[in-house]
Amino acid sequence: EVQLVEAGGGLVQPGGSLRLSCTASGFTFSSYEMNWVRQAPGKGLEWVSYISSSGRTIYYAGSVRGRFTISRDNAKNSLYLQMNSLRAEDTALYYCARDGLRGFTGYYYMDVWGKGTTVTVSS
Amino acid sequence: EVVLTQSPATLSLSPGERATLSCRASQSVSSYLAWYQQKPGQAPRLLIYDASNRATGIPARFSGSGSGTDFTLTISSLEPEDFAVYYCQQRYNWPPAFGPGTKVDIK
Image 1 (spheres, rainbow over the protein chains, first blue to last red):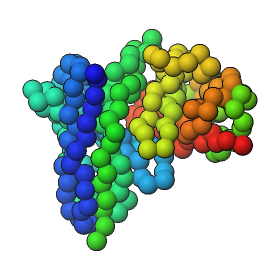
Image 2: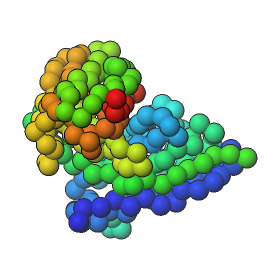
Image 3: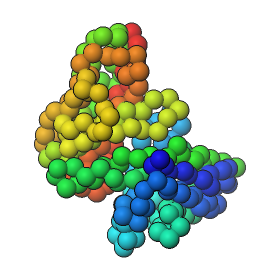
Image 4: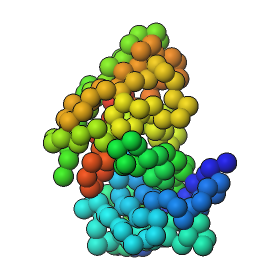
């Protein structure tokens, strides 16, 4: 079964750090580009970061650039999100999502999602 | 940066009715648009990609149309399991923004 499982969420004080992980199974992780997407309580979806299959190409949303770092370890089938200088507005459910469906246009879409891990930033 | 707007914010309909959801982009995204469904307590699910193609396992009652800046998701006859929030997302350029969502609830 194709699966993504996030972990590492929790309660952290403003200014603190947290490292999220996403473990993949059921597919060849090293062949896929990956994303982090978050959802604040009662709000919509916000794309956070992207990493190519090799790890060489990375993008960030403006709201997290300079504070968050995405990485991956293909040998461990794992995706990571290092979050530093956390703010109250980073409070959200964080999903990892696979860019697995290649459209006819050549672009990829997020076809597999984990259940998410909750990050709460509060004093 | 492309901004997506969705309308209406909430759509109140009865089972069996037709639902028409709109997504508008601030600039052309060609056909590089997806629709996702999210039910309470669940992760989003990909419904439509490249504006009009159904993802694997998605029922035929879901259809997408449009290109450029104006897109539509149509649910031809609402089933009880279709009451959810629907998001559009563009993949034309970075960042791959989502729209704010349309909630389809039971009238």
